[in-house]
Amino acid sequence: MNNKRFWLLPLVAGVLLVGALGYWGYQQFTVRQRLETALNNKYYRALYDLTENVQNMEVLLSKSLVAGTPEAQSTLFMELWQRATAAQADLNQLPVTDALTGRTAKFLTQVGDYAHSLLQQAARGQLESDRQWETLNRLYRQSADLNLALHDLEGRIADGRLYLNELVREGGRTLGREGPRLANSNFQAIEKYMENFPTLIYDGPFSDHLEKRTARGLTGKNIDRDEARRRALEVVEGKSDYAVERVGETRGKIPSYLVELRPKNGNGGGNITVAITRQGGHLNWMTNGRQIGRPAWSIEKARRKAREYLASLGFNNMVPVYHEQQNGVAVFNFAATQDRVVLYPDQVKVTVALDNGQILGVEASGYLMNHTRRELPRPRISLQEARKKLNSRLKEVRGGRLALIPVTPDKEKLAYEFQARLDRDLFLIYIDAMDGSEAQVLRVVRNPEGVLTL
Image (cartoon, rainbow, N blue to C red; front, side):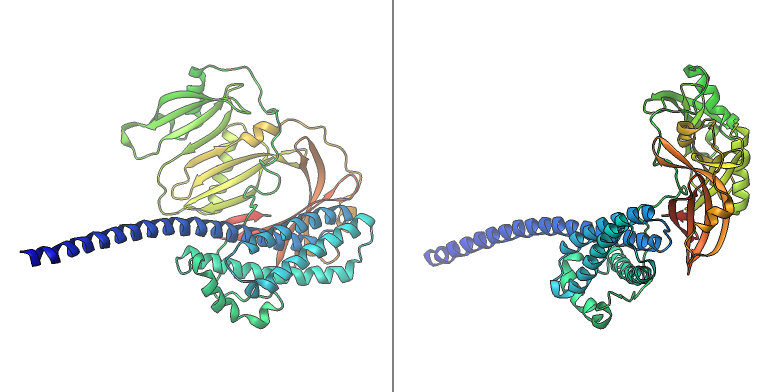
């Protein structure tokens, strides 16, 4: 018995020690996992910010190739300098050695320094267009290649094929094979990069990012809740199939009643929320949350339906400008017109289901914030004179319609709108109709989802 006890005590002690060590090891493992997760999140943020900044660098460089006035060029060079500087900071946060990112960092530094140099020259009016245009064109092509490589890396992470805590090892194998091409900042994508357009404006140029402080489009007297109920049902297709469930209120720039509708008899429709403005009882916005079936309507047919719907609500003299197609629905943007001038600040979005053409949503806040009759000035330069202000390198120049565009929250400009190409890139260029200056440059991206501008 004494011998058994002699062996039992060390055994128990050993089991307890192993248990204690196991518990301590589990705690350390848990702490390590949490720290690793936090570190990974930091790396993810740095990579996504780097991708966004390089994407914007590519866009800004492309715009600089078609900008034709020192004022427009100065604005582009200032933002390009800022984006390149931010991209350098993002790159420095990634878990990759300087040996692997040295040339990329050098490229970002050169873009920033060159943009800053051109900014100073533009301020002095000393730009040498031909030589500098060629340099900008080379930088644009190189930034496009870098953008492809970053999107490919981002795609591999999203697919679970690469974790950022393994980026040092994986980056060494992947980027190391790119040696000669890295010397020229000319990455080669292995896969098709993910589509990701930062600072994307689905609404076309000059939409709801420049809303005014007071709603100029509201007219009429204040209404009560009962009137809001009635008007909410009037804007819904098949209004007899819905019943009002409750009425609330929302404040903000456009105080409105929120009317919640539910389908009667379980007809399969989704619940609908309609915002009716307190002043005048105008439709502010509407959304329908029903499930969307297989697309059966064409974009053109859906656009006609959206236009007819707006006309039925009293939105007259509206022209379609841009659209987006995604997840079985199409979102159309319509702008008001006055005396054949397109009023870009006065836009309404209409969402149409592509399975049966039902109107699923309306967003009219931009229109209500901005719409009023303007005292439009008479252009001081002709269409032909405006066309001559365009960069001579642009090809396939079309358009020239007059448009009112916002330049600040409280200022608008009358401009000629042109569409033109430089190689495969499509641009919208706006020439001030009063003094011939370049008021705005936008790059147009067409894909299966719609028309986008950056």
